[in-house]
Image 1 (spheres, rainbow over the protein chains, first blue to last red):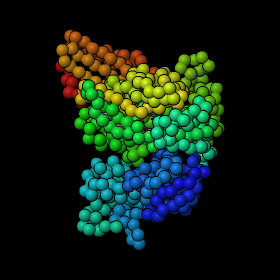
Image 2: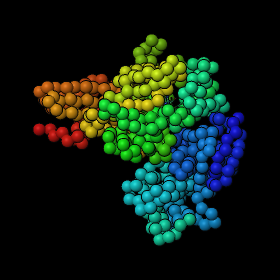
Image 3: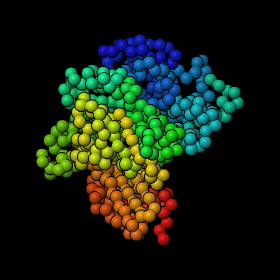
Length: 158
Length: 328
Ligand SMILES: Cc1cc2nc3c(=O)[nH]c(=O)nc-3n(C[C@H](O)[C@H](O)[C@H](O)COP(=O)(O)OP(=O)(O)OC[C@H]3O[C@@H](n4cnc5c(N)ncnc54)[C@H](O)[C@@H]3O)c2cc1C
Ligand code: SF4
């Protein structure tokens, strides 16, 4: 066991962890943040996406010990009290069906709009390209991100 | 959860050297972005190391710089997403940035490193399977067993014993940029050209010695603008290359053509041709013929072997078109 310090959704945690524990297992089993989903567990589906120091990464492929000193944001941490404009737009556009990929999609969208406030359609497609959605066919998710960009441009910020 | 292993994160090469003195060869595994290491360990529980050594704190392995004599050095730990956006690389060797941008997915590129990519494990449809599948079937040679499911006739002494295919997208591009690897090991520093680095053995894969690490990859920029890369895969994301082809075309007093393909054989295959008379058409035909002759695709991919073999020539021509070559 090794003791590590990391920040998750703004809170600092000091925990003893086993080196073979992934960040995904740490989030779900130690912190009970079950919004981050375990899909394929080997990097193919993207459902376990979280933001590590602001960038989307796959938590199933990262030993939690490698996140020492980093800042992690999960779906539970993107906004307080109300839905994030990306979430709102996903609901309005019918971009959620079974919901399994949704946390990952939302985090990808939040990152995209943080770095590209006015994304092109190609940038949106690139942004969703690492996360599988078996229900929506992606079109509605893409529309939702573009709509969320408009909302945020008009001052609707989380 | 994966079975436990010890974990070390040396802060300098000196610290790494001391650590290695006390570890037996084969008992440890290096990791950088860990994307290939962790997905491999999850499906191959028998391959657990006693110690995982993370290289991520070694500042000697970081940074992208221009060197003398028109060469570029890319630190081993440089992430694929950083390569895709690095201003120096985009200016001096855009093909490296463009190729990195087409690897895996955005999330993976935010962790995966350049050294990890050129060292990525070879793949085979019998090897890259879920843990459950692997536990039901007998372990093959690559997994430490004594059978090959792909070529059942393969036995000890068969060369190569394992035909798992090489899949790195960056390796063929770097090979055409005449890359050299800067290595550090318990015996000190050494250099090796990427051309001499890979072996045809799907298990051993390369000439890295135990305890040796890549510190940087140096490329020659003199022909970087004359190199392009094209790959075939089912989806435009996530999929490993079913075939990937890099082409270098340089027309001066003579004509130089080099082709390197990945995703087919156990190692990247490099073909170099030059012609003083600049008979382009004949050279291109010769390159396609040599590629076809050397390619040994097997049933390890969604696309049938014969199709992948034919596609090498198609991708050579697509690259040549991008490079401005006109057939007559
Ligand atoms: C879903 C998925 C899709 C992918 N698609 C593609 C694709 O389309 N094209 C492609 O080319 N690749 C693809 N990859 C592979 C990906 O590029 C590699 O996993 C990644 O580049 C490995 O880098 P890493 O830093 O994570 O390496 P790690 O996983 O940390 O290490 C990989 C190997 O390199 C060794 N290693 C790493 N750094 C060093 C060093 N400095 N010195 C010595 N040894 C070292 C490790 O010991 C290990 O053997 C894909 C991977 C996944 C999971
Ligand atoms: S080719 Fe290699 S990986 Fe594939 S089944 Fe044979 S031994 Fe295993």
